[in-house]
Length: 143
Image (tube, rainbow, N blue to C red):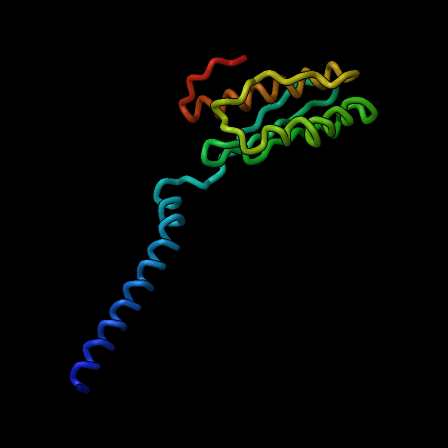
């Protein structure tokens, strides 16, 4: 009977090794896929718009989705332009987070009372979206 117990132990050990290997393959497959396909690497696009002091729009796309979108304009008028930029960063741009870049319209609504800065943000936003869409080979009709 001792002879029969030995093959069972080998079978259990073999099964345990197979399970461990399956877990390792599953755990490592996504990072390996990302490394080989270059997916998961964010690509950043930047554009500027002419407001009163200049506006810079930065868009990061990861796996064809917006992962980060910000406007900067520290030289815009503090009470008007900088408040408008803050409004874009706090309320408008977060709504676009995780959206597929090829589904994003290049149109942005203006912030009331900040026509010049809104125009600069809108122009910069349109440019970065078009850059990203072109880089991804998107053939999307712009709204």
